[in-house]
Amino acid sequence: MAHGYESAVDRLIRQAQEQGEFDNLRGTGKPLSDHGREYDEDWWIKDWLAREGAGSGVLPSTLALRREVEDLPAAVDRLHTEEAVRGLVADVNERIRKARAGLLDGPAVLLPPCDPDEAVRGWRERRSA
Image (cartoon, rainbow, N blue to C red; front, side):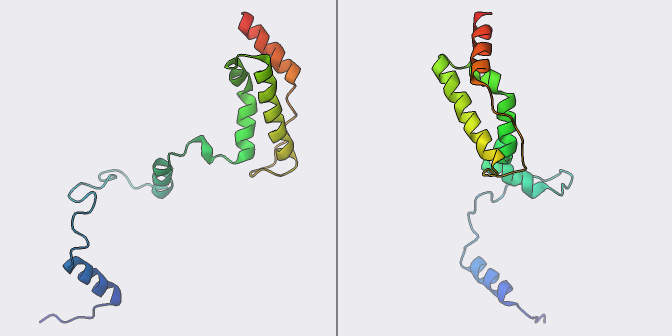
């Protein structure tokens, strides 16, 4: 005769099982996704990133801006007009201004403003080559 204490949580789980609340759940009968893999302490971070489809969006705004400035020549090369090049550089410079003023999230960055004339010059040179 096994009589034991049933906690409130155990009682709720038992009642839910009896009512069929756990029947036909998604993934029932399938192995766990990480079955057989070595334990990873950061499993929950990696799982969250995979679920959210997060990639470079995880970077703080100031660091993403730094990367964008580094990739500016490639971004400029995809544009078709000088006006579009100047517009992109103006947009980047505005975000640089905000970052320097501390209005963007992330560590401080001291990026100099991009020269729109230089960006246009490089854009023209790469288009003619």
